[in-house]
Length: 192
Image (cartoon, rainbow, N blue to C red):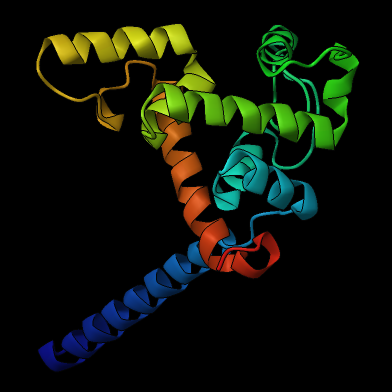
């Protein structure tokens, strides 16, 4: 085979490879933008009541349950995957008097409690979304400890420094999903 024919085949191969990579990347991008969304009225109402970004609530729901509320292996329930113990604590904090753990199966109750907890965590961490999400997943006491260690070293806790790999990945997934919900579902979520 001549050098010229070989060169032509190499160029064609490179073009095909680049075209395939572009299709793969575009395909993955499209898949990321097809996140499920349901219960938008509940999300909008809770976002307004709790002064939260509706895209953030939707992203937490997506990462917790993908909008399919089945109990987790840890016993968390509903769309926002709340542990009954956490819900009882939140009921006490918020002045709820008639809460039972079976209420967590009701989307409006579950999202109300999950949103209340998210607002509580955001307030606790001075509006730091990364820390609030880390605490939502990894526990308030753990994140308080991590923040104290970082503060003692004179630095701020970043996503990369979250010691639990699952929690670190959770925070990244929620932030990525929040971006998608904000850009692709702004109208449905009432985002101006």
